[in-house]
Image (cartoon, rainbow, N blue to C red; front, side):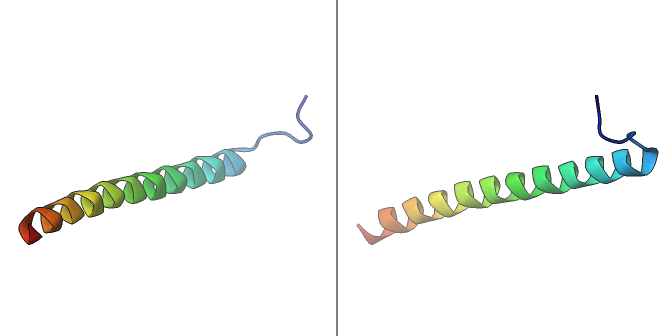
Length: 47
């Protein structure tokens, strides 16, 4: 049983925070993949 009733305002706050976390995770994942790819390209050029 919840400690307090889930209000509409609290639900919206939870959804917004969840979206921010998903966006941050997705951004870091994509930027890591791009950095990894660019490092491989630079290594191939230096050979």
